[in-house]
Image (cartoon, rainbow, N blue to C red):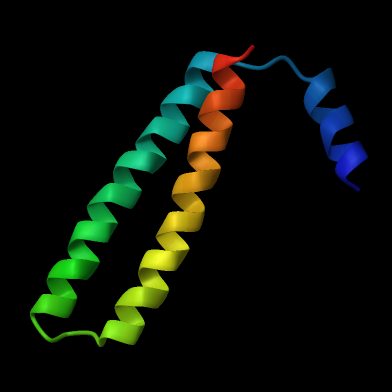
Length: 75
């Protein structure tokens, strides 16, 4: 399945600038959400466990976005 996805990606022309902007926006959104979740926990609207879970999800997304940006920059 991975090979098919890569093959399809290779056959389509890519707009690297557009893709980079999308990933950059995602990184900014992860930063905004991180702050918002911390504010919610500080206000007592979520537990530390809930905060930890949300921050782990954001960290995974942030790492993916950074990998994608690095891959785009290497092209």
